[in-house]
Length: 78
Image (cartoon, rainbow, N blue to C red):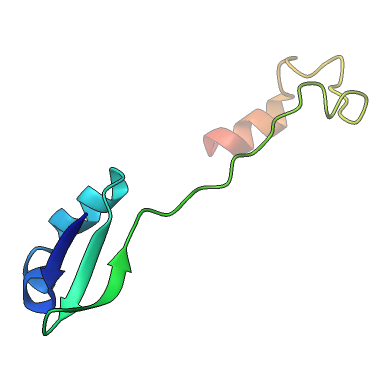
């Protein structure tokens, strides 16, 4: 654990944030007394369930069929 004073923390803030993101804990002190702690944020783990949308999404049989000429012309700016 690293302890830095407020002035040093302001001067080297981005370096300290990188260190905290890599798992290091930094104490920020004012007049030698620890007043704040800089640590990385724990990101919530999202549990993925395969097949969770099965039966809820339908893709039309002609999904990849060519577009009608008038619609295609609109997309192309003709």
